[in-house]
Length: 165
Image 1: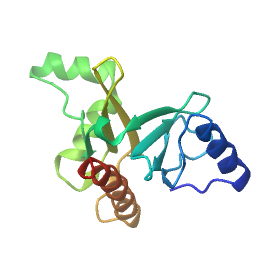
Image 2: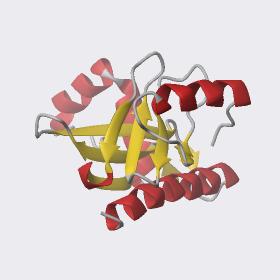
Image 3: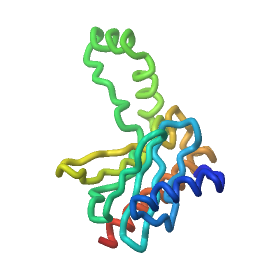
Image 4: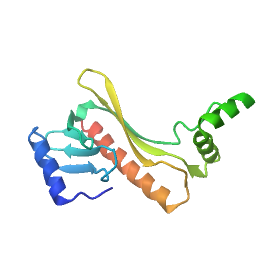
């Protein structure tokens, strides 16, 4: 998880305080220059907030949390039936086929994300994805172990809020 400068953290705290949100815990601090949301928790008022870079904070109640899970290798199984399908997939996106080949034997993880699903104000659902791995990484590597540990810690934080509803 990225560290946030104290002045940057103070600005976030003040911005959220104006909305009645008291930051008691930083769940995930997105690295600078990445278009990823940061997540904060207000344990006292049983709320959590997400802030996209350059966006306005979105504050949720614990009860708004629908699900949180870690997914790996999602979407890397191309439909390549027959020679024509294989040729078409190679022309359209060689990276998709390469990822599928790397993932199929289980030696590599080609993608790992934490998916947080919450109820929206209009009664719908919204899913935010936080990627931890975006390209092929060996499952026996230290990088994979660290990414997996951090992804599961983030998911556990959200699941604990869901359990506290």
